[in-house]
Length: 91
Length: 210
Image (cartoon, rainbow over all chains, first blue to last red; front, side, top):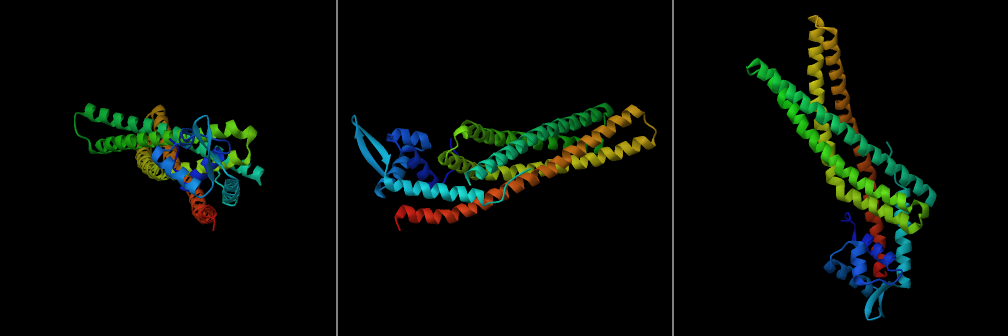
């Protein structure tokens, strides 16, 4: 079981994972979500234009859009800065 | 920036891993000392065929220390399990630690802290209680050692008592000092959690396209 993550961390995880097309099952398994929550999060990202759907051999696949790159880049920069600018834990 | 973050992440992971190992080791020693104190005093009461109050108090203290140390040990094992998973993940990715993997590790460490925050607080408390129990027992053993020296007991017996006293004080000090490192770990991550809530506001704006 994955530890407690915020909604924004899960969005980031989904979008980075969907850089190449993924099925719904792939996404919920990777992000360790139940289908209901998975549907809710994917629905939100689709609605906001961060994910789009493509059809491949009768399967619906989700893929991150150009717009998602901005979110991924911003999240990555902010979390790395947050970690880098905070005091360090050492024994 | 990435290299400095990787170095920092590695040092933090190593420090926390070492802290978890230290905690397990002292938890194990504390548990052994607790059970030995309890059993020795039960045997003394059984031998005397009388309810000796100091021995009864030490028996209770020993079993209390045993129970608390057992909890200390189990909780430490849970903490170690989590940090080992993250450390292994880091080891697997470190040859190809691109931005995405590095951020993934930061997210994982943050989520791990959120998940284990209350466990770490409990661990801190339990360690302190165990430390106090062993400190009290150390004082009792010290008095006992001094009394035996004054009454001219054999050198071997005094040496054993002195060693037991030192052992108790060592476990006691670890029980009192280890939580200080956990407090330091918690304050580092609390600071990051506070900062992350500020970051979230900007992320919301990005998501909403404002």
